[in-house]
Every structure is written in structure tokens, then in C-alpha cells.
Length: 282
Image (tube, rainbow, N blue to C red; front, side, top):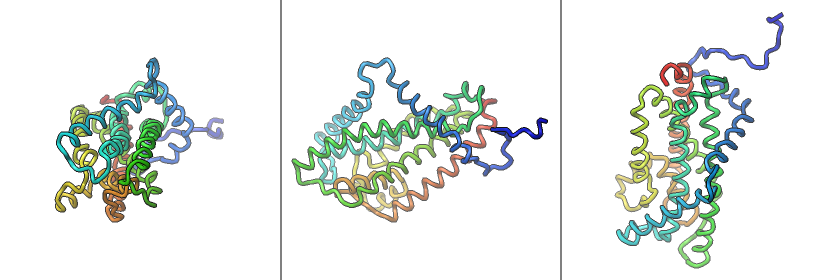
């Protein structure tokens, strides 16, 4: 009688390192949407300003960077108005860094849930990436207002056809944050030192990713080296698409996309391998 029963869900141990069961993740898309709603509502619950906090941070950070690097240090912004230059950097960097930080503790933060009910563990980091898109959308609204102000009051902005590729760049930034996040999440289940390492490593990476400095301020040798950092490539491409200033190198973009896909594949393999035994070490 039991052998003839058609089960809705059959949970089996993974027999291969490359058995990722991504099809199963898609089957839980409703749970992903539920987690996205939870992430958005829980963060700003019982706050007075609510979602306004999403734009307060880039505003104050942009003001500090403008005063420190542009007004005081007189650093170049590639002929882009300083406020707009730093705001573009902050908006897109925040999306990447939030995606990385919030997915890097997936196993530790959700150990209680993972130990009680079964669902594909990748649901959690994927929901974080999607929920961060909502925050990015609000910050893009702020960016659009500042952008239109400078577009109509100055002659320094020259948007071009490449602006159509900006959504693709955003997707790859999110995937890159997801890839590094699941790798760190797999490592921190056994080695908590990586939690402390990630905290200041993200800040160091920001200054090596052309978020507050344009790529043009470096020598050609360093530019060629930084081109292997996907964040640099996409950050410069976004600035070029929106303002006409910066660099847009299709070869570097393709290389960066290949690097991100490689990191994603490696990260999912590590994540899938760790989820089988992480409850014994968390």
C-alpha cells in the first residue's frame, strides 16, 4: 500500500557533489516571495520613518564623501558632478554589499528554522537578493531625482544607448553578492573567524572597487589589474551609461560576467555540500 502511494515530496540524500537540485528551488518560489515580504516588513517594523531610512544612508554618505574627497581633497570625479558621482557609487555598492553581508550568515542566522523544517536552503539567500532589489528601487528613485536635476542644470551628463544594459549590470552585481555570500556562509559554519574578516574586508573592497575613486585616476597597469574586479567593471560601465564619463569595455564586461558565473557555480557547490552537515557544527 505504501509503495503505491504517490508522494508529493521525496527528500533524498545527495549522491553527487554536482547534484544541486535547482529545479527544486523553483518549486519553492512561493516560499521565496513569502521570505521577501518578511524581510521587507521586519527590518523597518516599529520604526517611525520606515522605508525613509533606505534613502537617509546614501544621502548622508554621499554628503560626507563629497566634502571629504571632492571639496577637501580635490579628487577627480571624471567631470561628473561630485554629488551625483558619489551617489551613483553608493546606490549600486549598497546593493552589492547588502547582498553579500546578509547572505554570508545564512546558516547561522537560520539554524533554528533549518533544524525544524525542510526546504531548499538556497531559498534564504535568494530571497535576500530579491528583497534588496526593493531597497535598490527606492534608492534609484532618489538617484533619478538628483540625476534629472543635474541633467537639466548642467551640460556634463551625456546618457547613451548603453543605459539599457544597466538592469543587466544590476543583476550581475546581485549574483556576485550572492556568490560570495554563500561561500562565506559555508565557511563561517565551521570557522567563525570569517565573520570578523568579512566585516572589514567589505570596507577595504569598496575602496578598491572605484566606488569613491574613478578608474581614470590610476595608472594603466593598475587599471588592467582592477579590470579583473567585476565591481570595478560594472561600476564604470554604469557611470558611463548614465553620464557618458567613465569607461565601457565590452571585453572586461564579458570577463567579469564569466568570473561571476564561475563564483556562483563554486559557491552553490560549497553551499550544497555544507548544508548536509552544518547542523553538527553551528
